[in-house]
Length: 299
Image (cartoon, rainbow, N blue to C red):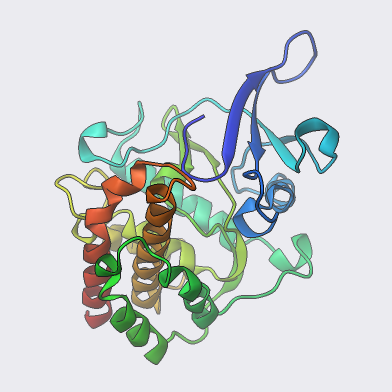
């Protein structure tokens, strides 16, 4: 199946009761089953969120019995729907307009903000703004082209100099962007792909979504121009009771983090370790993401 992380396979079960269509998620062969490759951790998150107001895909099966796939596995129920495309001319999913999409996304963030992470996910380490930033250091050193991340040290230094204090702490998705939001008939049906889920400042997710709603953060005409602007997202978030103090920092950190991630994945692609031409398309935007981070911090 399409996607840019892990391995996904769609399949159909015939001759039994219950849902017929499912999606199998597997870690790549030969990698340690930790972080984004820990599919059982993802299953834990999905099962914990199932009884909450956060829309997620139901887990059908999950386990680590190697007799099935030689590695741990997660099988989730297939849900009909579509996500918002990367390019402006891709259009919104049927029955959806930009304002409705924004309201649905922010409502999901509000529901996630109200989740009792300590009860549902006991023992999870709590991240801080600084640890959110520093976790990408080892990846920044391994990007495909140093020129793409030439501004990264300056952005990192600015972020380290003034991390936000206080703010709500809870479960974060970690990659809360339009391509991970499944819409159906004008409503948000599920938040997909919880590989980067963690506990920490909840503004992390709003900052991430803001980057993917800001045409000025990207190189390319029409890029993310079909969504509402970041300022509108912040208005809706605040109207729903969420505090937005420190959002500029989280937004800049998201731009920095994604630039580093994309440069690292571009290196894997060019070396043939994980072929995905998607990152060649993103490469021209990496310097712009970092420039925009500086602009947002300065504002």
